[in-house]
Image (cartoon, rainbow, N blue to C red):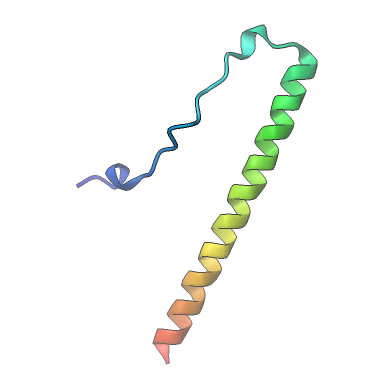
Length: 60
């Protein structure tokens, strides 16, 4: 089994057609994406913390 088979892909996300967006709309889109990236990075950090805590618990 490939690792990619385990990846959960969101059904509600699709690439936007950015060709027709104004500069202001593109800047707003970038801000939305940066907010989402920050949210995902925070989730990754929390999950890494949980993994580290679990590893520390079982190493004792």
